[in-house]
Length: 465
Image: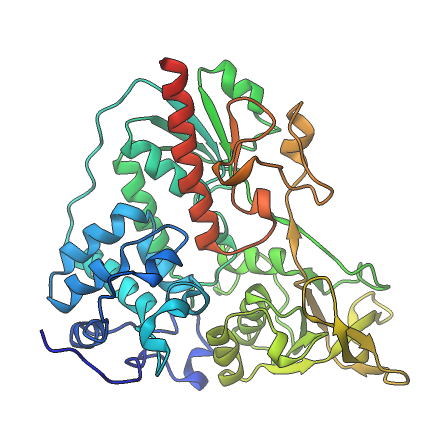
């Protein structure tokens, strides 16, 4: 097979910026068959597989790419699905640039192989060309309960189902998917793709019960009383944080969680939607992560004329993926970096009418290794906005920890686990994903789900022995 030694990866076809910032259709259009095969031929099939070592779910990346290069798309999907329960999702939202692609040897003298784009292509090709549903494995007679139908819970459910366990997932919302359905916008991750991945888990025998708030409807102890031999808590980190500045209770101040949930889960962008949301003129999104980019780009699509990202550090320190920042810039989002809000201003009706800010400068590195932002004296100014969206992080909801005696948590409210296997201070109770780490990436949550599933299997089989 002839290698493709082009130093640059094949560009991803996408909607034009001035078109896509007015709709919620997917921005990236995906590779064609020919593009995928040609890009796959850039892979050197390194014997040490540094890309695989950097993958939290340990996909055999050179093997699946070799299948694409040889035009064996079903073989490629088989390699992917052996390690990942959600390949179509990961191909779209994983930060490949800091993981698998960050270790790609082709990236030393050029651009890395487009691993994420190839993963997306393979998963989409399989969905479009193969209607065969996964087979339900033989049951081993053991039951496991999973709390939360987000990426970590779904991954654990898939791995345990493959091992023969009777798995029930308890989801608080009315739809399964967690952050995949309420947090990540349609233009980055179409919800039909999430539903298809979940349908595959159901075909393997995974039961998903929605509208089940564990800690309210049932407790963890109730689940054990119902015959479940282990419980995996993957309830995420959905409790928003605020800055504690004056004016945060004004009308027109949203958490990014609420704003995105109304748009993504409740479809507030549709004309027939019954979910209220403010269609703003000028919006400020406070924060610099992927969630902030999602909120800003969503506000633009809802018709806002001016949308600002307000971030207290510089462009180089933005924690969001480079691709998301570039897409936001292309779509007309205004970046006001080295800026920090100190007060939200309101009018006589209690509505947001502005945001008092100060300019910042970067000092010495703090405990995180990033340069500490310092207020620049005499730099105060008012930003003219009518909506403020807070996107400065989230923490786990306290409901489960407050209703589960003996479950150890840290000062941030995150569940404490013993190493990578997710074992908690309660026997038979495991935890992973954002409920343990705080808000992180989809793929890291999936990796935690895989580790926990393996540990739960060993725990139950060990009891049996």
